[in-house]
Image (cartoon, rainbow, N blue to C red):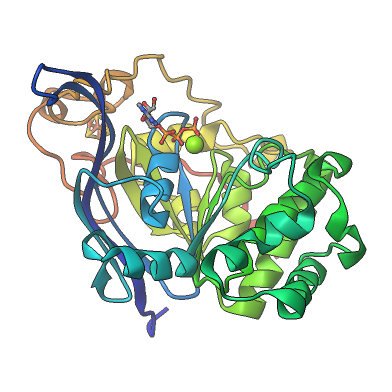
Length: 336
Ligand SMILES: Nc1ncnc2c1ncn2[C@@H]1O[C@H](COP(=O)(O)OP(=O)(O)OP(=O)(O)O)[C@@H](O)[C@H]1O
Ligand code: SF4
Ligand SMILES: [Mg+2]
C-alpha cells in the first residue's frame, strides 16, 4: 500500500480507570487498561486487533468512537484531534466513526422495533424523518440482507446472525468512514460467522469503509485483516502485515497466540505444539518495569525486566531480532 493515507492516528494513548480515590477525589489506585498505544489506521484498510481477554481491546475501541474518555494522548482523525473537539464537532465525528458490538443479544433494546433501532441514529441527529427516514431504513435493511417487511418486529424474533445484521445496519445508516467492530462474530454459531464476515467484506467494498476489527480469534483476523496489531497488557506488542505476522511472528506473545490456533492438517503444524502460557498476568493497577510479558515468556532474560521497551521494527521485544519464532507454518507444496 504505497498510496495509503492515514485516517486515524493514535498517539501515546492512555486510558486508566480509577479503582480507589482519596478524600480530594484523586485516584490512588487505577487500572491501566490502555498504556501508551501508538497506532495509525489507513483509509480503506482492515486493521485486526488481537490479544487475550482484558488486554484493553474494547477500551481502545470505545475510546476511538468517543464512548470512553482518554486519560492522555491524542487521536487525530483526518488531521484533527478528536480529544480537543467541541461538543457539536464531537457529534459530527461520532457519525464518521461507529462501533459494532460483540453481543447482538444484549446490545439491542428489546422494547424497540427494527425501525426504531436502525433509524435511531438518524432521528437523534435530526438528519431524516417521515418518508425519507422510512426509505433510508428500508434501504439499509436491504443492504445488510434483511427484508424491510421486518421493520415492525422486535429483536426477540430474530436469530443471532440476523440481530448482528441489525447492529451493522444501525452502525452504517449514518454513513460512517471508520467502523470499530468489536468481536462481531464471537457470539455467533460457526455456521453463520462466515455469512456475517462476508457481509462486512461486501459493505467495506461498497462504502469504502475502514475497519478496526477486534477479535481474540486469530483465524478470523487472518482472513479479513490487511495488517494486525497484537495487544498485550494495554500495549501494542507487535504490528505487521497479516501474511508476515502469521508466517514469522516477531514477538514471543504472538508466537504463543499462534500456537493455539487449530490447524486441520497436522503435517502443517510446526516444530512445536501449543505453547502453554503460565497464568501470571501482571497486576493492571501496578505495571511491572520492562517487558510486561517477561513473567510468562520462555525467552526472558534479565535485560527484559528493566527500562522501557519501545516498539522497534514492528515488535516490542529486546530479543526480537535474534529469535527464530514460529508462525502458522504453511508447507510450500500446499500453497496455491
Ligand atoms: N469501566 C471499567 N472500570 C474499571 N476497569 C475496567 C473498565 N472497563 C475495563 N476495565 C479493565 O480494563 C482492562 C481492559 O479491559 P477491556 O474490556 O478493554 O479488555 P478486552 O481486551 O476487550 O477483553 P475481552 O477480550 O474480555 O473483551 C481490564 O483489566 C478490565 O478489567
Ligand atoms: S522482551 Fe524479553 S520477556 Fe519480553 S517478549 Fe521479548 S524476550 Fe520475552
Ligand atoms: Mg472486549
